[in-house]
Length: 319
Ligand code: NAD
Image (cartoon, rainbow, N blue to C red; front, side, top):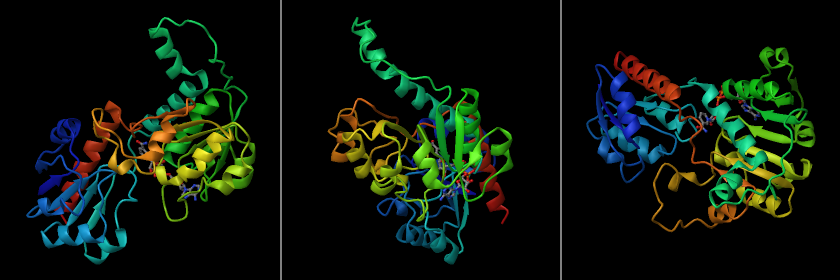
């Protein structure tokens, strides 16, 4: 099977090549979109990542060029027009479970860094400023954490928060026994908004969940709430969140994902002016910490992603 691997970074080449016995992998640096879809002409499958765009136009071009399978090397699939893929008879596979701990641990890293202001402290120490002014944090122990979405990552995150002695409240249309066994409690969404000191998002991006954090839901939250999003950027109405940062309704914001990340994330733009006013505004708040969609980025997760993705491709090749 000939596979065009889009958005390919050096680490993709390294991990996929190691796991890709029997597959002919061609690594393409560009993102898959309307301009680049023709590069997949003559390939049997494409392998894509979170910011590749597979709308109906792209899918039709891929299909016309002979592509019959789309292998997502990620869990989320909000970037694929699944209905169109189905109509064209194209198979779609993804990696539903690869080290949920990687993203859960990154979530906790964001919480602890923001709370103990490690990002500030790191820079200050390097400048010779050893004072504690402005570095006051709070104990996680005894705080109430609200987890939205208790699938693989939400559950792993709930476990970590429990380990810190937090009260864990959860919301998910499909509650699981694992959460209640570890001492978590399912509540209605509004109740979770009202009680949480820390709110962490772990549900997929769907038409139902898009902008679930918006002006209206923000009014229900505690003043000074810490909001963490390691799931998908568009779960949050970023403009509304900026207003809530200004009014100090949101005390801390930790983002591993960003609504408009498609044009920015995963690229080294350090010598360029970033033409994104919303992103620039977010960066002006000292209580905002943004990482560039790196929650998944551990050795263990990359091994698992490569193995599952290449297995999915081999299965697709067998029909
Ligand atoms: P999962 O499918 O195991 O769990 C998602 C959970 O969300 C399910 O239990 C589902 O019932 C629940 N859910 C669906 N709609 C909901 C709603 N309206 N309200 C509350 N809960 C709802 O997925 P997962 O592996 O835990 O991944 C969660 C999300 O994390 C993915 O969708 C993906 O977007 C994101 N993710 C991010 C990274 C990263 O690097 N930052 C890596 C992997 C996944």
